[in-house]
Length: 137
Image 1 (cartoon, rainbow, N blue to C red):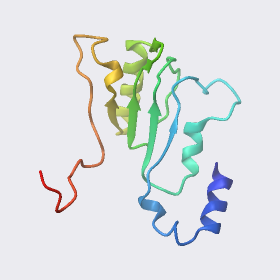
Image 2: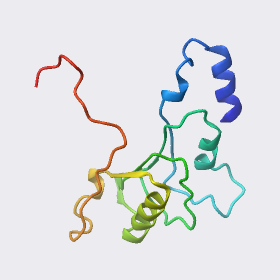
Image 3: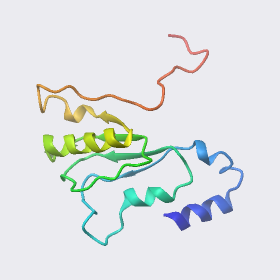
């Protein structure tokens, strides 16, 4: 990922001018890479030259042993919808705990609604949901 991004920046200098303001993210909800030598998409984010990093854990299908979210601003969590599957409450809480420790915001998708009736969905965003100027209400 690092080399591909460096090459793209080199080949597109005008487009990459404000790359520090771009959002970069990966999807990582179906495999725990902490105990393997496989390519880890979350670790690969560390090489992206932006402070705006996010992880989409949708669908969250495994309970991660280790979740290192330092420098991640946003974590999105959801269930698989067809067929309906999710790793369970413990897995979701582990991700939330890791996000809280790292200072990342957590957004739970509607696919988790109603799974645990005694718990509210976390709907935190690290970017504002402002309407563009001049757009009627």
